[in-house]
Length: 338
Ligand code: NAP
Ligand code: GDP
Image (cartoon, rainbow, N blue to C red; front, side, top):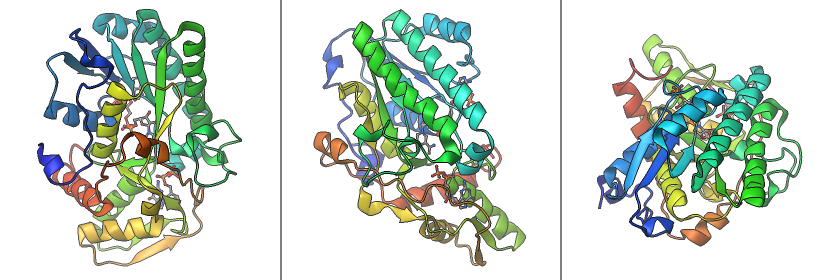
């Protein structure tokens, strides 16, 4: 048993019980391998790599995936049999609000290029990432996998959302026309070591961690943007990594699969801020700047489909995930993305 499993971090049988039981060498290429999720997958697979698997983690330094020729060259070089496609322009509410066009164009280009290169090389399986923030703004709850295309997304991030929805269109079209097994998973808000701690562009948890760090240093109050009322499900990056490795080896549907914590574990932004304050031992004031937008009030997603496959999966308690991430941020402040 790994250290993480002993500590109760999300556990899942990621072993080669699925389609890869064959002796043929499996070459897994991970796009976006230098990011939050990519680094977590790297740590999880390095705990135990089966002899017949080789994993390659790529970043934008290896190829600009917005460029088709660079994408083709990367895939020709490694000739993967399996792909986890994470590379994307990613950001929090405020980054999205300012850059919908760029989010749409870059993500459309990357997704189209990567899936075309996978098709041309006959890649056996691709797992791409959607997000629970791409679902319709006006919807019933809980949200399920069948609702991806039901209605317009929240206006704050329509560029990112429509580009991500098109991954599902591409997956179905490659399957219908060519029999390809290209699928997608749908994570909720992810956090963990190697996140983007930039205050203007990052997601709420890393943004608030950086703000508490500065508030503590400068003896100022912590400023939380918005009312603090919106609700979010947060998944620790190592839990998501285990689930994605399982999905690559064992999930065989083209239809998306939501990878979210239980609905009961959804918390408010205000509560999340308090958990971060506690993890830092911050004793200053906490103020809410209600002139800032709240974004979508909630996007409560059901993990019932995941639970059918993995009924016993245990998510890391959010308090522990936040404490580990804060500790990582403090130990790696100089190198952290910020
Ligand atoms: P991240 O930390 O920002 O990492 C993004 C990755 O994409 C990096 O490895 C980056 O490479 C690479 N990349 C960006 N532009 C590229 C380009 N033009 N060519 C090649 N590579 C490029 O993102 P993440 O949070 O790990 O997200 C991973 C996936 O999960 C994404 O598809 C995202 O949409 C999805 N997701 C994330 C969340 C979340 O809360 N973070 C929630 C739901 C879904 P460099 O390091 O070289 O820049
Ligand atoms: P979302 O979950 O896709 O909406 O994106 P975020 O991870 O950026 O979370 C946005 C929510 O957190 C909104 O309700 C914001 O008002 C709230 N929030 C509070 N403080 C911050 C902050 O410092 N950074 C960010 N990104 N969001 C914040």
